[in-house]
Each structure stands twice: as C-alpha cells, then as structure tokens.
Length: 102
Image 1 (cartoon, rainbow, N blue to C red):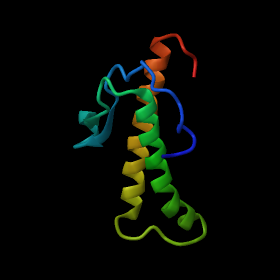
Image 2: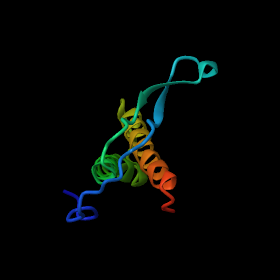
Image 3: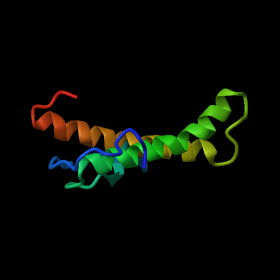
C-alpha cells in the first residue's frame, strides 16, 4: 500500500455522484463511457488513484528521457491518467459537498 494513505483511519466520506469519463463516439455526442461508482470510501478511492498514477509514471518518465511511447502505450497512459483524474474529481466533489475545502 502506498505510504501516502497507509495508516489513515477509514472515513465515512464516500463518493457521492458518479463522475463520468472516457469520451466515446463522435465528439458532437458528448458521451462518456465510464463512471466512478457512488459509495466508494474516499480513502480507498484515493489509494487506487495513487496506484494508477504510479503505473503511468514509468512510461511518462521514459518518454521524458527521449524514449518514444510506442504501440498503444500512449493510449495506455492516457486512459490511466483519465481514470485517475475521474477518481480525484469524484473525491473532490464529495469533500466539497460536505463543506471541506480540499
């Protein structure tokens, strides 16, 4: 488990509304394929987002050092970052709705 959230007590704050992500179809349709589930403990949600971001760091770091993102790796990084962002957005919304400025 990531040291950032390890040891934190479980919280009663859960994700409230599903944050939609992953555009699909024609742009004009403005469709999202996936949604963050309602009712997920925010500590667990943030741990998963942290794990996703950690996974994306390796290929991004390699690209920063001049190695190309080959084959589908660019899409892998894109979808991982998009998913992690949706989780963070859902947690932020849950905190905001409870008057917690994060």
